[in-house]
Length: 346
Image (cartoon, rainbow, N blue to C red):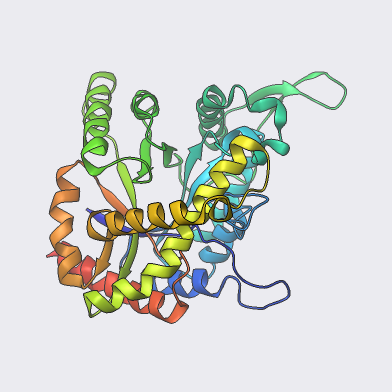
């Protein structure tokens, strides 16, 4: 089982303040030296929650120029917001800059506000994500895509520059819907998922279904499953708990607020709507994630969780590290992830 870095920060850097991407760059360098598998960056728009990452290809290009061997992946491109040729071209640049290390997870999108970029695609987003992913794959191979030009005339286009890899490594992102697991298996793509809103046991059943469909559809291919887990490793369990308690609790509240805004269209602060209930729910969520839903504590404690995660059918843990903990502690934790990776390799 591989370990990789995952970024999805709530952007708390003040306007005009330097160093917004220092943790991303320094973390990627450290992960590269430590033998981790990949660095994942998301696509998010119009909100501080994840708002430092409006274009994972741009940040992937930056990571490509300061690393030597680590994979550089989108976690995820919101496919219905973009033309497939644009995705293929941007990520081919990343592939060329990195010498063939690019990979893309495609997401349908869930936040309605994001679709201010392409409102006409919101209703059919779950179908479009699969169609667009396949079109990007064909363009990546050098095949033509039939479309229309500015005068409405039919035209065949090809994406440039040509990529280094002959095939683009592809995943579908699922927030927990089993149909997405099945769809990823049918299209011979990996699956990227997380534990927000689903337990380890629930994930296990969906992975089993993914493997079943993969075996039926593609002889000899079993797929690739990436599970995102919030992560901070340190020397002392109690110290780590106190380091992550406040920032992770606020992170969970920000996530809930963004979800509410997606459904209501309004910028709502749920903590002000019902502060006592929100604090109680966030505290309960923190306790659950800290005990069984993340990699927290020492290298030895994290190592104890790994066999349980691997038994679910997980091939890679995407370690989400930028949820508000002070940067020095995060970088120290990434260094310890390298030691955990050595433990796995034995």
